Image (cartoon, rainbow over all chains, first blue to last red):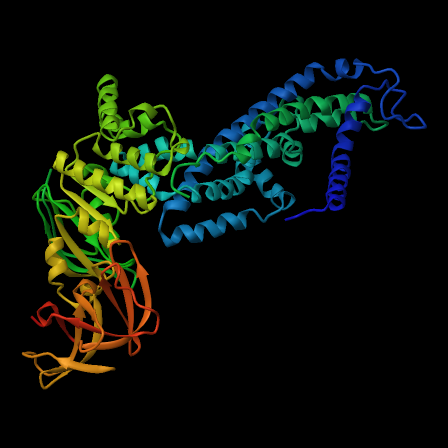
Length: 275
Length: 348
């Protein structure tokens, strides 16, 4: 499509405005995290503090933060590992299996995505209580796997459907059994899909608040999003420390995303078959 | 190396019959080509032999052993796919060596055999590349090397040349033929290209509508097609087929008639190859008007409109004619092929 100079300029301007719209809250979060307690509400508002300080970070990095961080890491890490493993196996059967019952099951998987968390949290809470799993990592991992798995299956199925079946047939003729075909051929080729799905599960579980708040009541089991709540008290909100904590919570996910984003675009199947 | 036998092999997909009670014996070391238009059942036949599809009924024997229930991985055959099916995440060496790795061949021996196979197809200088960095012809060679790296009982090739350009196809065709004779491995080759079939095959099996139309050596099929379908499929350009009626020792078609002795009365299809036709100004058996005249270098291809049909004639390079000029086509009656007008079968 040919673009005139003026439409190009308009598009670029629009993109800049959108970028500002999206990035401003993050910038504000960072800016407030560097302001001393008196400054967040100074009038006129300042974009950047006159006297940046790391004091908020020092306070925010308290022992509880480290516990919360470790809890988040365990819960999210286990959820990612379990969801991606189960998702890949399930998606592979949904893609390559020819049974009618699988088609029906796939519809159920799609259906399972449609329930809002708020609607299922009470039954899940009761289940967790009846098996005595409240206040454990397991309760959150089970809940997170069950809500992210349908989307994970859906995402991975999309990736696997793009893999040419002739590669698996070639491997079978080369002498590989079904498990070997899956491990040697399907898993390496599905890597961009696996990574994209893992990042999705990580983002969802890292920021999850509702389940984490409901299923954990003791400090030593809390995850980061719930932990941020500590700075919101009955009589006031400690914005500086809250924003400093928020920055520390966001950095790992942003880092992971930046590091792995090339997998979202790079297709590994280039050259596999004549296109 | 092994002989292959298909007994009453039948395959349906739902209500669609892909292959109808096929019987075929393939000899040890033979280069057999399955030829036919798309959807005729040739690829299905190959996939059944490979074990990638299960027959609805019938038997598949490889080297005297029934293999119906043997999975593809245990049939010890090698297949070259139309799209090459190279593993994109592996290097050329890893691709070629994959069958050996699965078979548990030790690393050092594997490397030797990979190098030897790569050398056979002149790819030994590209062993560290990945398939994405290769040209179509190179990928094709890697696929071949992967097939020959072990000594399979059978080579299966599913239109392996169809994705190459015309020039490379001619080169690869000769190389394939040479390689197959050198290795002396039974080969089943699927194609819809009759030139490939004619040049490669020891025997050709022509399939149409899920059934075998004719089995024979290329020369035999060319000289004596079993029915009108085969006649119209083999040859470049294919045989001219003229529909009409035999009555009283003459063949009547929509724009004329000529003598056709010793044939019973009734509907018939007359076949005559383009190279058996001569162009004369008048007095030939068939009259028509020139539709097009194409100089191909060593010959001129003359398309002549006869009634509603176009008849192709191969004539000398300087025998081209102006469009719409009236010509008469003459032929030796002994070179005619006569098919039954009702079922298309050859009339003897």
